[in-house]
Length: 324
Picture (cartoon, rainbow, N blue to C red):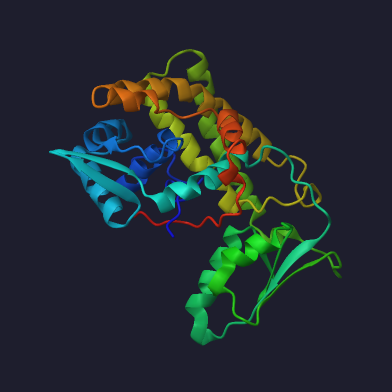
């Protein structure tokens, strides 16, 4: 299966703008955000080419990106005469609710902790170093830190989801269990790069704060609002991949995630109506009916939408997707 989450602009580090992102990533980010509530509706390719222009994507690069995503099965292509349209493939569309709920809810409230740790124990030889490296990458992505060689721990309790996510990467004699008994001191700074994560949050905060003032002053045009919204969202969605979401006792009292989320919500929500106006205005020239069903929601609006959907509560495994 192909997955949507973390498929696009998925680093909170860089870029602070979008010029260095690949065209397929930007096209997929645009489609995922503005058509995620109606993912089966085909979008005219000419409209998509025009919409990604403010993001720094040339018409030639946009058309090549659409073809590439279709070849990979990320997008489905439909044709009517000389007109071509694209939509998210069913596999990708099926993962959008869970993945977007994770993005929009991250940092919303402090996670409760029962005092137990999830422990993964495994041993892979040097001959299996590629598999070992892939397993370590998955564990990092799931919020684990290396307590010892081959022993990784996390405060998160969903063992079934962790087991399903690790899948074939975990050897058959590997172990996953929960434990509240730990002898010795745990220094989270040795297991997770908290100082680096903190700095990434601070950079994010510093970069977003000026947009708050500009948006309040009415200085942002609709086309620019689209770009700002995607920059903010693209960087925010990377934080769940680097922040292990540790319990409060293991974090500094001034951990900046709450302020980072506050600014993300403020900027993204202020951009949504402006960006929707721009996207719908472009789309109306190609498909007026589709324009009426197109648009992003605010952060809380998105969470409410997915909470009302049965498929958003399914335990779906979400994995990175390379769009290159």
